[in-house]
Length: 402
Ligand code: SF4
Image (cartoon, rainbow, N blue to C red; front, side, top):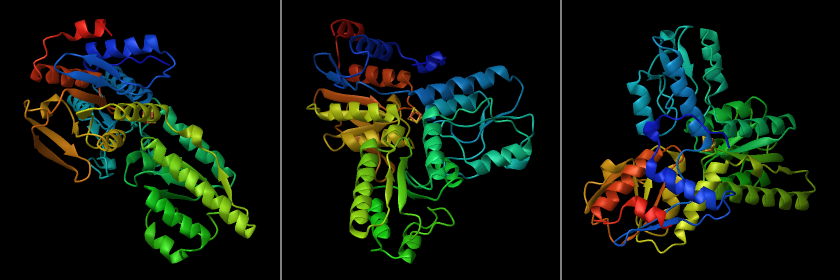
């Protein structure tokens, strides 16, 4: 896989050693079991796959190159480039400004932009509507477009299916930048509807079989379907695509379910319902991070730490998996670990940061991070845990014995 030029502040000496060790032993990544580092008082179970993915490294390389190549120019990002506060803060410190927030709220009006400004498209991509606005302003976007190729792969498949008259069911979070972008690109060629989970897929299935009325569809999926969507016409030939950071297992479950409904309905009615196979559009990094987290779940962990931005979809899904098995703390960086008795952890259900006491119970600690989290933050988290646990062995000593 391509190597990217990433600022050294995001690299880590500890993590790069761990990753290199596993890569040498298992270059084809067949073994998703964690790397266990035994420090005596504490054992760290480090996930086999975590941290910056291809798309994030690509985006970071392009954004920092944009800064380097354009001294004195105004540089904007359409919105947060990736969902990590450390990376976004560093870009802000270097002068980059965000045009919109993550929910699409305008922070800088379009009128303030000039044709000679630099605008970076984030890794999630953007909508066709936004591209048109920039084009009308004369702002070029090709040179510093950081849209991840794996997101574009989803768009390309949607385009192909659209030209074959498929309707696209998008498994994603309606307000997420990537889902908004994918919806916009998909809607150009086909009808589309966004569903966020299995519960919504079950309701959609009722609309497919006629069990739920047309009006019920419009009510349930209000604002989440293309303007001309007619559930009586547009659910007979479908394909499922996803926001690449959703739980891959959930996307597959939804696709299997809708395929079964399609087949059953076809058998009963002689109707020609058709289902497109889109499994190959699932993102490799999301798959690998989630598989590595599932392997962590097989270990008898006392607790787990997940590191990443609180608005990061892929990181939240890792928490969602791990908390099924053990107490799981979701922290943005090492500063959330106040001491060996108090930690501040983000609750993905209430969306609030909670202060938790007596968190360090037991010595078997699972640890992983999201696809937008720099390894340098993981490094600091690990060092802090080892210091608090009073580990006497050095990291180099333990790694060398692995
Ligand atoms: S998680 Fe996948 S789709 Fe998203 S930026 Fe990373 S590689 Fe691209």
